[in-house]
Length: 208
Image: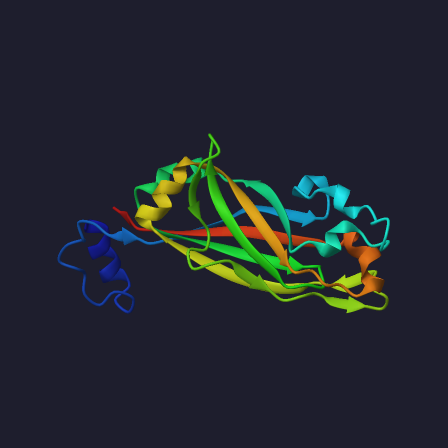
């Protein structure tokens, strides 16, 4: 208080009247942002794809995956909230931002699941259904595809976000429904990829 009164006397233009008392407490409301992880999925074993479907049919000469009703690609991203444990009790909400690049010339449906250490699902990322991503744009003969970009946010209120402490990974699913590629594109499908990037922001309120 003595310092405040001295400052008021020396710098009257900055502080016209010294406060009668200082506040007993105040709130700090920062936002903590951090990357979660990223993954690329394609027609390969790492993405859970049955590569036997790439073999050509003896009658048609086309790979067997062309006749599939849907193609499911999946991969895991490590998920760990322990780095922010000190802030969990002050957390108001958590927002997960999903950024996707679709390098397939097909519509994709994307969904993700939070899994615990025993392989059980804790929660899903999108509670109102999967995310739809437009096809990429084919260039030339199809050897190159300009990816289509999509972004979606998933908001987790405090109780739901706290439950995610049990999760150790995110299982990402991407599904191509009724693939029907032009014949010229079929040989290039093993080189196409779907990429996902996840980031998070946590809003906390800390009392002092």
